[in-house]
Amino acid sequence: MSEATFFPQPQSVERQDSAFTLNAHTRIFASDSALGEMLARYLRPATGFGLPVHPLDAAVAADAQNAILLLPAASEADAAESYTLTVDSARVELSAAGRQGFLHGMQTLRQLLPPPILASERQAAVDWTLPGIRIGDAPAFGWRGLHLDVGRHLFPVAFIKKFIDMLAFYKFNTFHWHLTEDQGWRIEIKKYPKLTEIGGYRAETVISRAWDTYDGKPYGGFYSQGEVREVVAYAEERGITVMPEIELPGHAVAALTAYPELGCVGAGYEVRRTWGIAEDIFCAGNDEVFTFLKDVLSEVLALFPSEYIHIGGDEAPKARWQQCPACQARIQAEGLADENELQSWFIRQIESWLNERGRKLVGWDEILEGGLAPNATVMSWRGSDGGIAAANAGHDVIMTPNTYCYLDYYQSEDTESEPPAIPAILPLRQVWQYVVVPPAIAEDKRRHILGGQGNIWTEYMPNSDHVEYMTFPRAIAIADVLWHHPAERDYEALLARLRRHLPRLERMGVNYRPLDD
Ligand code: ACM
Ligand code: ZN
Image (tube, rainbow, N blue to C red; front, side):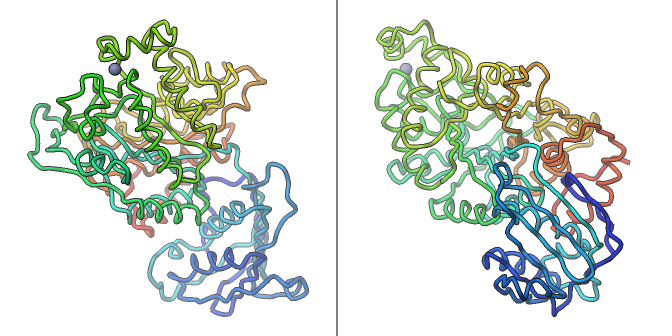
C-alpha cells in the first residue's frame, strides 16, 4: 500500500484502520457527471479500468459498495476550493461545495494511490489499494500561481498543457502566461498581424556565458488564437485560470519592431537578440499607442475569461520619454510632475479601460512609482517592499519576491555544476522558508495579500526539459507554502517527504532536479 505523502500537505489527515481497493468493478457515483468522467479519465490510463459513472441517486449511493462517490457539500462562503476525502473498506467519498474543491480532492486521491497511477500507460499487476483515511482540506491562500515566460523561449502547446497538468496536480489555481517580450511577441493578434509575422522572430540569440557571441540561428514562433483557446479551455477544465500578460509600456521592442510608429524614436528597432532591459518603450505621447493597446487587449479579453489581466509595467526606463516632444507635451497637458507620473498616467488609461470591461489590472511593483492606479493589484517582485506599501495603501497584492519565488535563479551555490542561469541563487531550502504575509503589513491590511506565485523567466531555458529542471522540486515547495503555510519549516522533514514523493514526478515524465544528498 502506498505511504501517504502529499504535496501540498492537507490541513488535516487522520489515518483509519482500513483500506479500499480499486478494481475493474468499482463504480463512480457523481452529482455532476462531467466531474465523474474527469475522475474516470484520471484513473483509466494506468489501471486500464473504464470505471462507469452513474448519477448520484441518494438511495443507491447510501449503500453502494466498491464505489467512489462525489457528493455535493453545503456551500459555505469561503469554501470554493475546500473538500473532504474519506476512504474506508467499502467506499471513497469525496465531498465539496464547488467544482474546484472536487478537482483538488481528485488530485489528493491520485496522490493516495500508488505512484504507478500517474503513468500514462497501463501498468500491469499493480495493487490499487488506498489506505483508509479522513482528510479535511482548504487552501491558506486564494492566489496560488506559477508564471511562465514564453517570450525569451517558447514551448510547444503540448508542454504548456503538461505544465498546466502539473499546476493542477499541486493545487495551484493560476497560470500566469507571460506572452510578450523584447525578444518575441507570442500571441496572434488578428488586427495587427505584423506583431507575430515580424515581432515573433529574432535574428539570433546571445550565447549563455559568452556575451557578445551569438548563435547565428533565427528563432521564433507564436501561439495562434486557436491554440490559445485550446490552452485556456484545457486549463479551465482542470480548475486553472490563465492570466495573460501583455507588457506595457516597457519590454515592448518586438512590438515596436513590427510597428515602429508606436515608439518615441519611430524607427530603427530590432527584436532583441540579447537579454536585459531595453531603453525603447511605447511612446506615452502618441494617441495611436492607446488605440493599438486597446485593440490588442480587446482581442486578449475575448480569448481569456480571467478577471485579472497583467499589463507588466516593470523595467521601463524613462530616457526616451525625457527626449520625446510628444511625451513631454503629454506631461504638460496632463499637469504631471515627471516621467514617473507619466508612467502612472499611462497605466491609469489602461486600467480604466479594463475596469469598464469588468476586468482588474495587475502590474509589477514598478507601477507604484508615480502613484498607483486606483484599483490596481500589485505583483511584488523586487522583494516584498512593494507589496507591503501597496497593501498598507489598501491595494490587493500578489507576492512573488525574487528572494523566494524566482525559479530562474541557480538552485545551488555550486553554480559551475548547474546549467547556466540568472546570476543569483535560490536553493530549495530558501524557497521553503517563504512566509507570504510580511509582519510589516498592518493587521487590518493583511487580507490584501491574495497569495503568491513562482516565476519562471526563460532567458536561460531553451527547452522544456530545462524548464522542468528549474521548476521542480522548487515549485512543489511553493505549492506547499501557499496551500498549507506551515508555521514550522523543518527542512529535513521536507526533504524526507520529497524523497518519498519524487518517484511520482518520474511517473509523470518530469525532468526534475535531484535533491542534494
Ligand atoms: C520582473 O522580473 N522583471 C518582473
Ligand atoms: Zn514618446
